[in-house]
Image 1: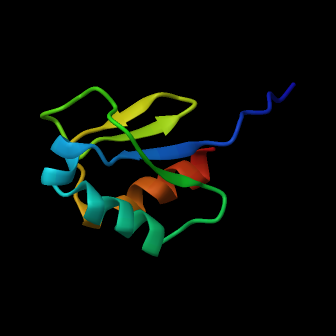
Image 2: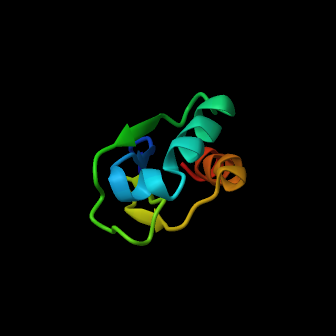
Image 3: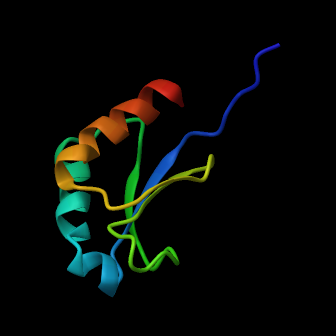
Length: 83
């Protein structure tokens, strides 16, 4: 029997430390290459200051640290396929 998984959501930290590390550009890259079935949301602090920009994929709680803008589309594609 197949189990329905809840859809995934990608959070991109937009708090001070992550913004200093380029999270604004990471969020913009996700939004510019939007994959319709994967919502991307700018979030508050994800609690991993110093490792940013931080990206969190829910509901699986998969973390990505030090994400660069050019990596955003590959992350989104992976979760569009796997979700």
